[in-house]
Image (cartoon, rainbow over all chains, first blue to last red; front, side, top):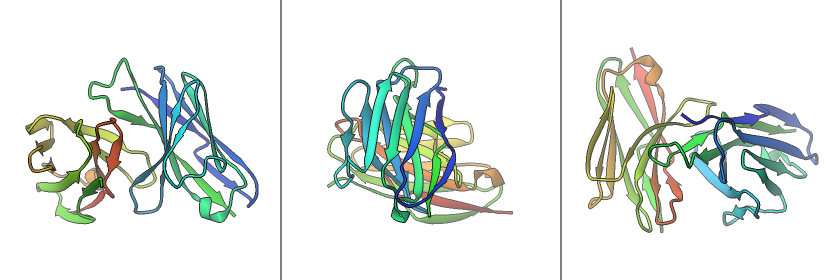
Length: 118
Length: 109
């Protein structure tokens, strides 16, 4: 199946700093990628849909100035958590659909990034 | 509104069979996905149903009834490595996934 990578896998930062998370589709081109957030023992919460070459579509309640998304190429989307605070600590996961593969139009997930804000 | 319901936690014995149920309400429907997620890892795709009936894939099978807004995931010959959370997700009219909270499956020897 299609492979999605995410970097870094873990990051610890101080409150007030910004953190960038990269999501890459390794063997396919993804015009659309998705960014999720997951709290412990909770399900995935869609934050935004990242569209290559255009602005991301944010879900209700997600601050676009807080969570900056850039989809600069067909294989890379980045999520920047600006001025991070302890409540931003979470597991962030990206996913993408492979328009040429994915028999069921399923989403392929990256391994996730564990963010801890001190 | 859109909603997915599945049990929070289930326990089963190694070698046995377990059925995880999921009910959904969505604006439009373009299929039902099941994903497996081990603790601290990303979800991995298990199955997809868009037509009524049973889809079998090795030890795992998934069933869908569109008229009832109901699906289940059936796991046979349970192994310890099957201990994980199982996420049900329905695709709505915009092909957006609506996720359930997940069912934590605990396998006991």
